[in-house]
Image (cartoon, rainbow, N blue to C red; front, side, top):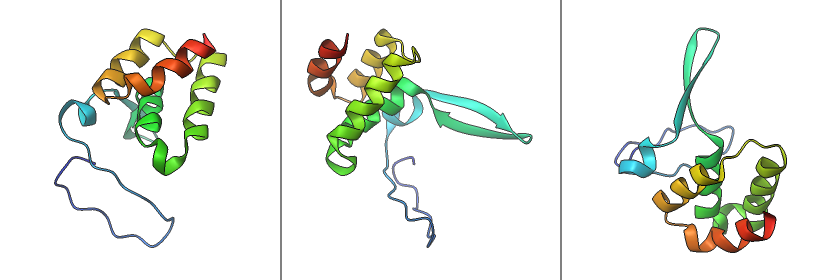
Amino acid sequence: MPRGSHLPRIKYPPLTMVQYSGEAYSSGIEIHERNQTPLRVYNVAKTIADCFKHRNVIGLDVAIEALKEALAQSKLDVNELWRYATICRVTNVMRPYLEALQ
């Protein structure tokens, strides 16, 4: 969610919302249409960078597994991933895992 916005109050499912500002919020958004409704979702590379950014909340094993799966399924452009890692400030965290998996 954009920084400064109010978090929605819902009881189920349990959600943890994070707020981003600037380029960290606006970059990597793709628009997919489902049932004539446009949905804004982050692309694979931005999602993986976000996983590494929030590794202390979701677990480093989840972030590594997401990286492995995206590379194995050829759904990831490494240059694009590196760009989002720079935006999310996780290049130093991701570098050893990316080097080990390539």
